Amino acid sequence: MLLRNDFEVGQPIEKVWAFFGDVPQVAACLPGAELTEDLGDDTYGGGVGVRMGPVKLEFDGKARIVERHDAAKRMVIDASGADKKGRGQASMTVTAVLTSEGRGTKVYLEQDLQLSGAAAQYGRGMISDVTAVLMGQFAANAQQRIDALERGETVAATAKPASGFAIGLQAARMALMRVFRRFFLPYRPELRSR
Image (cartoon, rainbow, N blue to C red; front, side, top):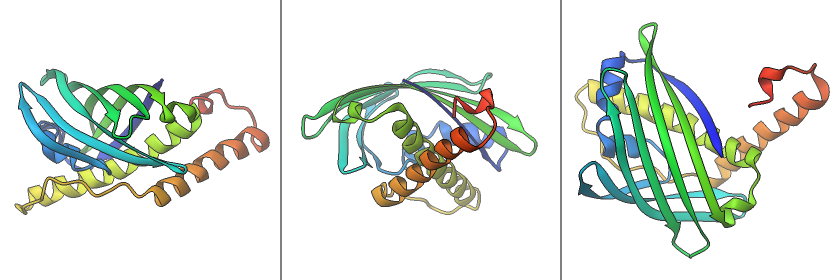
């Protein structure tokens, strides 16, 4: 399943790109993610946990930077893992592209996600909504970390846990808005992809 998200960071592109090069700091921005080891050669071990409805999924695995293009401000990461309880597997290729946007930076993310097991039971809409919520939290956390580092503050490279309740509420709100748009607003093809 192909998911696309974008967000803005209020810092110049060079600072944001430098931040994206610090993988432990970037991982700490994603709720529920944890890096446990640097395996060398741009490969990291760790895990991610997220609650989708009544099921809490916790994956252990590896992530590797397979492409980093400084001039184009483009990075590609392959990640894969297995659920700790043996309920499924996940693999994802994430492509991040940074562009200048006024005085800030726009970050475009494309995630090619493959799920099996318990997580695969959820529909594309639910997974897309949960991903959008997590990306919103990631963007806010990235902005805070970049600002703190800019001020010279020491920021621990650990992620806050993903709040299943908050994510569920926001994802449900997004699903309801989609239904409302579908039934009560005029048809607009550009909204079908959201």
